[in-house]
Image 1 (cartoon, rainbow, N blue to C red):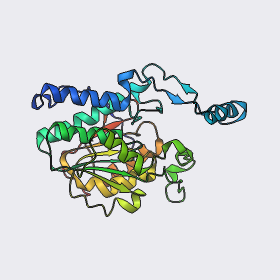
Image 2 (cartoon, helix red, strand yellow):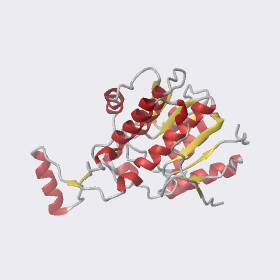
Image 3 (cartoon, rainbow, N blue to C red):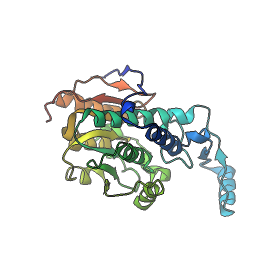
Image 4 (cartoon, one colour):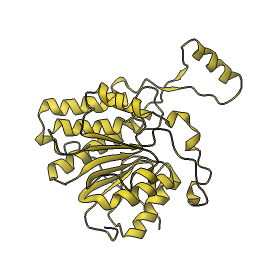
Amino acid sequence: MTTTPTVAPHDPTVARHDLSDTSVRYLDLLRATLTCSLWDGRDGGAWEPRTGAKRMLVRAFRSQGMEIVKRSAPGARTDGRDWPRLALTMTGDRRMRNLQECAERVIVDGVPGDFIETGVWRGGACILMRGVLAAYGVPDRTVWVADSFAGLPAPNPGRYAADTGDRHHEYAELSVSLEQVRDNFRRYGLLDDQVRFLRGWFRDTLPTAPIERLAVLRLDGDMYESTTDALTALYPKLSDGGFCIVDDYGAVPGCRAAVEDYRAAHGVTEPIIEVDWTCVYWRRSEPSRSR
């Protein structure tokens, strides 16, 4: 059954009464630098023509250590509609605000559990979650960083028909090494023992990951397979009062189908709330049959 998300305004004041002005400013600045929105998203995206003379031109420039960069359209970075050249996340400011609000809310409300993102690209969203823990002085939660660090899997349409024709695995830009993601955490001073990495395909790593409870579950795996693997392994560990965030719900039909199939099969009835043109979330309020 198709679910139509409801639209709810963000509450930028959530939990801020527990933070000093300095910590509030730190988180705002962290989010702005991770998205490059501090610079109006002007890092743009590298021009990647697929064929012909234009591609030869790009190669010639690169041989001289130069790139041709497309300027981002106004509002593209806020909405997470471009693939940035320098920013550490492509989720956009609205989705980063949503993630921050969810992380702050579970801390203030005392919802038990760690934070995880499945599909991290350059790590920006996970860096923000670690920054929230630092700002609130929380020493006993872990940020789990789950990714193949080698791009997305080729589709398996025999098992997951919704992934038929999916081409995410063809994009080299989506492959970011573990070493680079670790270095991105290090550059922000946030690489420590509260950050743990799960390297490999979700079907191999998530079922046996040593995670006891989760308070924030953020899914950014694009495909039906990646989304259903993450939900199957991790949603039963999401605490009541915890948040499930789905980045690609509106952008990738396979992702939406995986979410709707899982919710229907496991009796998940909490209303889905729209963040922007693609991202949605819900807050777990009651145990479902999968628990």
